[in-house]
Amino acid sequence: MPLIAIASPKGGVGKTTLTAYLAAYLAAQGWRVVALDLDPQNALRLHLGLSIREEAGVMANLAEDTDWHAAMVETPFGVQLLPFGNADPVDALDSFAAIMEDPELIARPVRQIAARADTIMLLDTPPGPNPATAALLPLIDLTVLVLLADGGSAAMIPRIAENSFMGRSATARRAAERAVVVLNQFDADAPLADAVLAMAERSLGDRLLGTIRRDDALAEALADKRLLLEDDTPAADDLHAIAEAVIHQARLRKPGRRRGFSALSEWGG
Ligand SMILES: Nc1ncnc2c1ncn2[C@@H]1O[C@H](COP(=O)(O)OP(=O)(O)O)[C@@H](O)[C@H]1O
Ligand SMILES: [Mg+2]
Image (cartoon, rainbow, N blue to C red):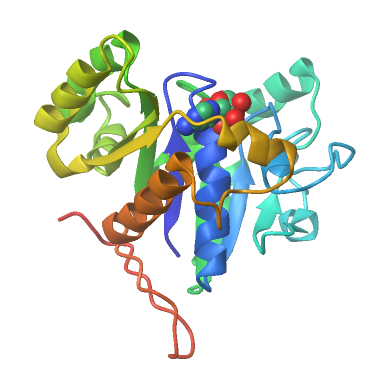
């Protein structure tokens, strides 16, 4: 039921890395996880262990009759993946234009897939404002914003704290209220790092889920088609803590002995 978006104003900050880890972590705990890649980079499939030769997906050449269930791929990490699909830039723009024209083109299938009570749906979103995230905004229960501990991110923090960073509409404001923040690629020795962390702690309180240290093990794991789930490295420890914080923030009830599953999509008062 819950729909969790991983988002950022910038590219290259670690959205896809975090989406893949969270998806695999939740799947390993027994949830049914569907991950949807909304970014034309189409990179989530690589993080989840698929071959670069697998080019199919739901977003490239998006059309009314796209069969989302048929397009779902079972990944080696137990996550059901809806890849973006291989799209040249013109195809990707066409898909986004079609969504601007008719947001239901993606809102309808996403609502259907997320409706299953045993399902957690994760969205890997394109950086910055984009039609795909905008179309799904009313459906999103929690946004995990990935920032860096740098000047650009520091500039965003006040607008995140006052819930205005997604726009002025009521929908944008409601979605912004349901956003939490992760500082990725954290390096305590970097200039500004401590100052940005202190500012984020002060402004965001418990909406700051924590930091993920800069760690080359992440890139190495990706090259080996692994996800650091079992590893004992700084980034693995941090990712684990962030995943547990997301479970807490989204009020996900751990699947266990009980048959079925109950997740409260209402959270955060
Ligand atoms: N904590 C980290 N430490 C070191 N490298 C990281 C970390 N997080 C992400 N990266 C690397 O940064 C690059 C961009 O990450 P990615 O998840 O693709 O970002 P995005 O999806 O936001 O564009 C990748 O090469 C990834 O391995
Ligand atoms: Mg990405």
